[in-house]
Length: 268
Ligand SMILES: [Fe+2]
Ligand SMILES: [Fe+2]
Image (tube, rainbow, N blue to C red; front, side, top):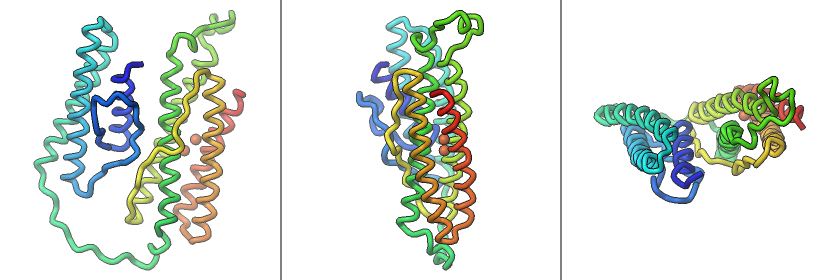
């Protein structure tokens, strides 16, 4: 994969999940977004998102130009479609830029029940968000990686007859799982903002993709194991603090993570 394409994947994930600004559209190194610039007003959201779309468009123009020069028509057509979506997003954020912010009103002091949401507890919830980001990047990349010819090859008569193999089965399994991780992420971020705190989105641990379906599944099973251990800790902390809503939320998420664990475990 070229540096441009790697960056475009990074940029896409950034745009989808976190509306972060990418610092340099043309930097050769593939970077996970470690600092998320979210903004504090509608006008700031619009400005940050407009800049992110603008950088993405510049990068995609370069990719389209390069793909055209190389005669890589399929990539060119794909990026032309993506480009047109991004352009619509840019125009949308451009319109929002003209909207005036609502007049700020003095903030009321936090009520006593919110005192439990201290720095350490919010850091723990942010760690959960980081684990979800990590799982999303890992599983999405693996899902797409199964398009590689080597992984698509059918090795037995049964695989040929059924037009399927382990990679295609795992690829189909990964899609609903990473969508569920996106739901988890949304729930966790919602909760952090609901109690008036800031989500410091991060990708942690660094996603590990692997080279074969065996490696995918081993790494994914380990990612679920890590998430289960972390979420157990959050559930007991939430119980200790009397934060029942967060506790119930993580209990539901934990059930999903255990199901994911067993889905991966079945293939090992
Ligand atoms: Fe999850
Ligand atoms: Fe999971």
